[in-house]
Amino acid sequence: MRRNELDSVSLFNAFVSGGYEVIERREQINKLNVFPVADGDTGSNLAMTMSAFIDHSRPLPTIGVTMRSLADAALSGARGNSGIIFAQFLFGLGETFGETLTISCEAFADATRYAEMRAREAILAPVEGTILTLIKDWVGLLDEHKHLRDFGLIFQRTLKGAKRSLDNTPKLLPALRRAKVVDAGAEGFFRFLSGMTKYLVSDRVEAVRHPAPPPLGLHHPSRGGGYPPFRYCTEVLIRGAGIDIGKVRSELAAFGDCGMAAGGPGMVRAHVHTDDPASVVRILAVYGSVGEQKVDDMLREYEVVHARKYPIAIVTDSVCDLPEALIDRHQINVIPMNIALGDAQYLDGLTISGSQVLEGMETDGSYPSSSQPSPAAFSLLYSFLSTYYESIIAIHVSGKLSGTYSLSAREAAKIGGKRISVIDSRQNSGAQALVVLRAAELVAEGRSHDEVVAAVEASIPKARILVSVPSLKYMVKGGRVSPLKGALANLLNLKPIVSLDEEGRALLSGKAFSRRRNLDRIVAMAAAFIGEGKLRGYAVVHAGDREAAEAFAARLEAATGSKPLFIQAISPIIALNAGPDTMAVALMKE
Image (cartoon, rainbow, N blue to C red; front, side, top):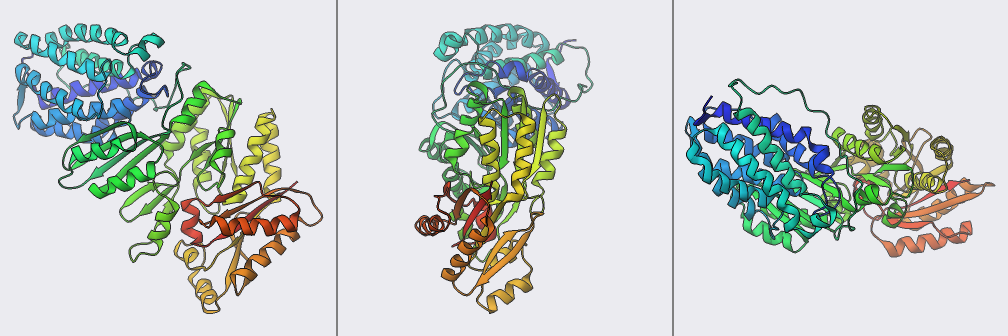
């Protein structure tokens, strides 16, 4: 059946068909991913972008409004370089399509020229041999064949040319030539065109009916490549009136590489590879309200794929106040908690700093709040790790303080094929860090999964944290202590000492009338906790005053006869509940 025109339903169905083709081929696309970073997630990122517009858009009365629905949904859910380029291509089509009931072959071809230009504009430094090249070549082929006036025939002819363009990408990009692969993003766009073609050459005009796509996982290839020059792949969605997308792109250039911004004056998706996601988000917040944020640790992803040290993966959450050097030494995977500040949601320790949280706590606006990671975050992480590790051990903040442990256990149970043990540490902050470090050291010693789990479970009752807080008002605001107790402590000018009980609940363990006496008391309590036993190690954590923490550590060294394993600033989410000037010691006995 010849189709010289498409109505909004047929146009929508063609795009959905293309999207499902990418979703079905995502693992194949992942295996090609060597540029710009060999972290092997281009297929998953494109699949998530496609899922966003499939799930959150629909055919509407006119061509223009349907296309804008597709584009907005794709932009909101876009992930990765290629996902954002694809979303910007759709955005360009949405800007071009008019409010007509149908669109002709000629009008479609003309619109894609503008869309290709908009997609290229999204990139600060466009590179040939990528998805951009394939889009450009395909758009040129559309222009050559639009005289055929049959969408099915045009797509069949141009798909052959697109395959030639895809096969040519290694000649244009040395990284592809060395790896002997085509560009992953270009492969993804080719698969999208293939899916569209399948619909357009059929005789069916009803809605495309595909089976539900399987869960999206990060199935990375075991392929060579260099370590990423910047650690974090950072993406932020900004909403607001009159956003200057050119200025946003210029801002990104100062933070790293692979900078791009897609969208328009009302909504922009920004992407950059950087070592400082928090500063990126802080700068972008000037342009509008900060929405969805995504930060992938490309260094850890690269190591998991190409340089795993051990057969067992360790997972924890950002409440664990373990220094980055130890996290990296043991290749520990940290899933961030969420912090709400004003109208924006941030990723704990990644897109918001402790100082920002402390500032927000003192403003007259709504008090910052915290929440557990999303189910999707756990699902993606476990799917990814289970591809490469023999087993996984996750150790989380006390289940009495957060729902993170329960959520992690539920999502782990859905992953088949690999053993995943999820443990409630019944601790937080520095004490949780000591439990996680114990697990990591056992894995490094070559202990079996069961041996590690048993030893970790045995170590939890032997850990304790003693926290000196200047006031209970922050714990009251955070819901950890009742307002009555907080008011009484404030009235008496008490400096509380907070710990956790055996089940992991917050517990007031002592008090003093001055900070000096408070710390004296904690030193004595630490010595009493050790008693006649043997100290495995201890750590000092603090809310930003490193000098005071080092002085406190010296007093503990004199009392225990050993130096701390580490001194570490607390995570923003711990600062949220403990407040400024917090100081704590975490201990673990043999």
